Image (cartoon, rainbow, N blue to C red; front, top):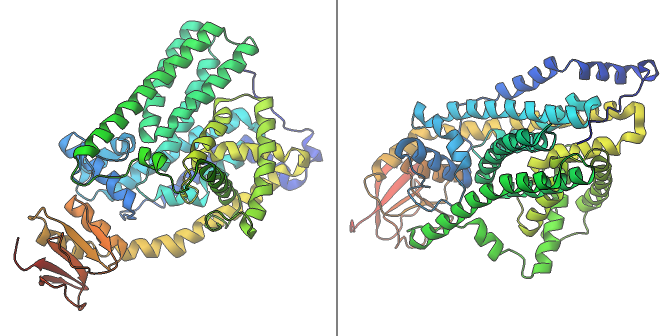
Length: 497
């Protein structure tokens, strides 16, 4: 591939003072990257931020560490690929609630991600590598998912290094080196695709980059074809094997879980056209939420295009697309060329995710912004610096005002949850949590390592053996209080069937 184009303008004396200072910072990246690593280090915590997906991931990781097989809440059908649980499974060598060890593993991932992102920007946008890396790492969505046991951080980390490995294949000096690098890239692509199946689209971006390299005589056609197949086929087989296993296990599972295949076969939209239109709207919303400070939670109702949010997001995304086109024309790159395939996959997968689905490609989006800002010449770094400060303020504010109080409140309940779990654990029949905070039900499911039904009403309890509810609530017919663990009570079926 063509060497990176360094668009730093000289002489520096023509730059405003702030622009000159920012350019000097870019030439001395170590202190700033260390400061970013420190920002993540101070978030290392023994708290668990429960979500429905985190319970499944943690259960899978625990089963890998303890039983050397994969299960989700005792269910052989997991619904999720095993890549992320495998990466975090060593945390369970430190205990049954290894959230501090897990937090440290996430910190290591964040540092490795930062190094990969900085290297990519240094190759593609060298004049602003530090600022652009900072913009990725201080994004509120990155911080939110960093603190949770979800696959986003692992996927982003492996993605950026997979891109480096794939680019290195096309930059090889000889066929033998290309094949050797292809083996490494193929292994990384397998891991990436077993964290999230959508990682397979990197092979499409690589195929396009290889075609461009053939057209420019940088690589011979037979070599390009062989290395493309080398990296794509093993990853595709790995994903196919997982999907086959998951569908097979679902057929015999006592508690069948939804799969990504189910999402494709039964989308929320009624027709294919509606699905694609809604998918485009969701991905435009994702990108706008990631780029504009403070709008990470701003979105319109399903199917709504005529609202304030879209009036802001659509022009922004059109401009970003123009910047992306500049980027790929100047420097064809696997990451940049993967972007349209990645977005297309999530346009077809027309589900909302609070920007989590688009988050992994935010480095390419920000590189596109950099090329879009090219006409500003001597003000580009200043614009990025303002954006960085604004994003950092939002991320710190959300952490302090929202996540810390929520984490403290939930994790203060562990002793109560363990008392409830201890009274239930010997009975493998159904458990329901009625009108209690979500984190209580999720923590109970984690402690029992089995599903806990969550509901807002009592119903008749005919399909369960134990019910957890707020103490003092009217009892469910056929159940009696077996344990009070303030402010909750455990009800057990009277007939003990």
